[in-house]
Length: 299
Figure (cartoon, rainbow, N blue to C red):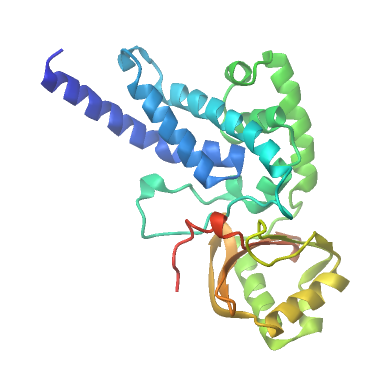
């Protein structure tokens, strides 16, 4: 092969890889809950592809890349599980905040498949269950291909996905709202907090609402999960009164309307909402600066 042919082959391979990059990022992010780890997995897959003696022997590049990224993401997930046992406070997924200024090839598509509600539920699954569910139910990978990734038989993988599916369905909103309805709800939530309107805020929250905060020991946040409207509503008003947000932007967080704000202490936060049957059922606040490094400046 001449130098010109080699260069043309490399460029063709790079173009094919870039076309697959957004999907690969979604796969790895949904499996790990970390955009940083997802990007590492995708980059390692590219290095492995380039390292093949003859990449042309790969008949289905998309399938090869998905399998490679999935194996890397599973390894990353297993490693992360051990680290998260030592995590300070509540661990939440790294939020995805809409950024229209970056390269589309580097974005993870913001839709229901990467919702905060789904990612939080996925944390309850074993690594094998999560992999089986994500690859089959979200990305349509056949059970026989997943079997090679998790080291189980196709029948066992089918069972893993079935168990995972039941848990996911139990944790997902049963009557989700439209994006416009959630935006209205978030607007009303913000107005009630800023106006100190406790009755108005209570009317927006499910009676069993869950409030979670992730500071990772590097930012002040909740020490544990709070539950119930009687506790959560006053806490949100108190937060708004005592050094509340200075700059607030309504934007897309993991595919749904959410908030990015900077508090009086100078720290940024991302707030994601889960909505079911017209009420807010969960609020997730990420303040760990390590998880906000990729959040765009929206001010």
